[in-house]
Length: 373
Image (cartoon, rainbow, N blue to C red; front, side):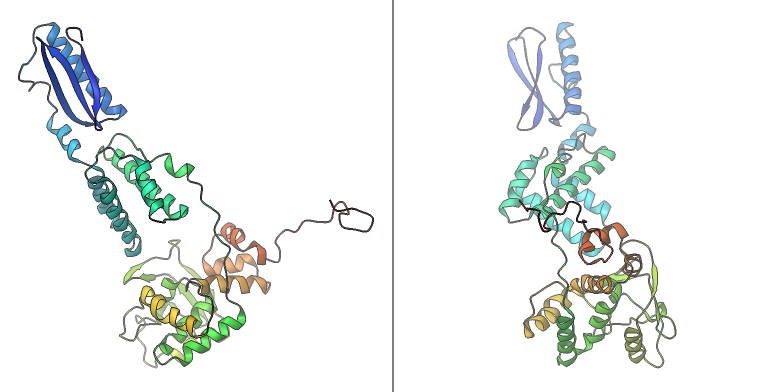
């Protein structure tokens, strides 16, 4: 190495400088992860050392060339610490159930990377695949990490996003078509709830789900003040999930009329001297129903008792939509009731929409005298 030559290289993901001065070999770790932005910083520091050597102003203590306190702070910020900061940023924006996903990913990151500052995304991808995660879930987690690093770059905590390209090449298989319950299955489910000694108090709640197609959290968060005096109109304006109140999923309220049988059920259910702030479907202890407990205890028990193939409680929603569309209800009306984007409704339920397109017989294929190849 010629006099004054200072090389920049990478040691286990960290940038360092290497040079020789007066026959002595020097190494200086800068405390910077190996990426394009930090490489420019390292090159600048190398140039400074080269000039000092050539001008006989070299600092033998190396104090002049060591990283600043700001760079030292970057050095200590590993992947898990960055994700912790991002999770703290998101805590006030997401609901409890979504936050649980962040906690789960944080545990997995710690297990895979420990204190690693510059992560290899492929290592996490391999780990998730070995854990049996499906492609859809893997892509979701990769997108979460990409968003984390995008935020980190905005906060000037990191200089690049190693996860940016991963979600785009993870091909996700198409979602399965909804599997609604048949009318006969709905009758059996409701009858089983009504006659069950432990879960009969949930009959009205389940009846409301099947009869309106609202999301579980929307029914759980429904209060008497959101119903008209005769219970024929309802406003969906609030949800409750795991005890946390928030606006509907689309962040927009919606109003619609209820069928006569649902309105009749609500009128019979409403106490004579009711408090408008009270929940319409409380748990036995008077608080909001826990959808997790409802699914794992009541829902599973009822379906097993009547030997109906398990589908998530959310299938009450697809059941309402499918039967409403099959009956000839205008898709726009169904979308207004359920809070769906109309394009999404067509995408998932085109098969049962009467106005869905059908190919015409253009060329006589299959008719007498024409051969089908």
